[in-house]
Image (spheres, rainbow, N blue to C red):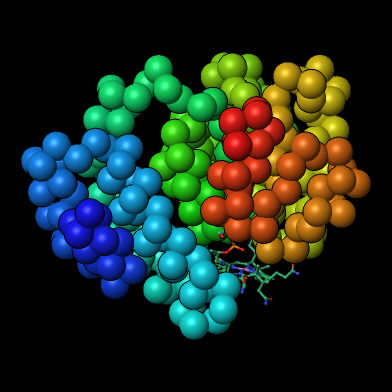
Amino acid sequence: MAILQDMANALIAGNADEVTNLTNQALAADIAPGTIIKDGFIPGMAVIGERFKNNEIYVPEVLIAARAMHAGLSIVKPLLSEAEAKDRLGTVCIGTVKGDLHDIGKNLVAMMLEGAGFEVIDLGVDVAPEKFIDAIKEHSATHVALSALLTTTMVTMKQTVQALKDAGLKDSVKVMVGGAPVTQSFADEIGADGYAPDSSTAVDVAKQLIGAG
Ligand code: B1M
């Protein structure tokens, strides 16, 4: 649909006002909230992710595009909850591990997961293992997603996975890890169930882990 392509283009251009206008127009034209996310926001963010990966754009452009996506998401999110609450794929508790304050990538992963139909509980940055454990219990989470951007906080990631094991939660929640210094072999080493190098893959991995991919 042309309006969704326009929306993706506006998001890529970082034009939050245009994304807002087009989102309202799409809703007025009876396009479902989930379709707006799936065929408008996600393709736009996928282009941004790809350009960022290829060093064609840098962090400020990513942030501006993410802000434009948030402008649209804030409109469709309440409607999505109402319309598609029963179809939620699962609940993901996500956070940047203790000692680490980087949240740009984590926020993108959270947005993509949300857009893909997961309920996302964002615990923020500098999240201690106990806080993850409390949130998993409180929200009956199906997944926990840990982000780390520093080689020093990869250690905390390992400690968090161990804390989940000690709390007896490791078998009931799927543990996903990611962040620039994190690799598949590190994920395997610490006993994580899944690793994703980027936010789009994070969605695929989250789905695969519950057999929905
Ligand atoms: Co920091 N920083 N930083 N920093 N910073 C890095 C990470 C660094 C590589 C820069 C460098 O030296 N070249 C370096 C780490 C070196 C290392 O450990 N090997 C570094 C450093 C050293 C530091 C400080 C220690 C600097 C200092 O104070 N001396 C300090 C640490 C503070 C702390 O955390 N305790 C620090 C601080 C900061 C700022 C506050 C200034 C700012 C963060 C702002 C914010 O996040 N709100 C910042 C920034 C912006 C960066 C860089 C430039 C960009 C990070 C970023 O946002 N990338 C970064 C250099 C770089 O990466 N080029 C750097 C964009 C983002 C979209 O990508 O986060 O990788 P990314 O997320 C991707 C994937 O990794 C993946 O999906 C995302 C989207 O595709 N992903 C996941 C991420 N989390 C996931 C979780 C998942 C799955 C996938 O779960 C399943």
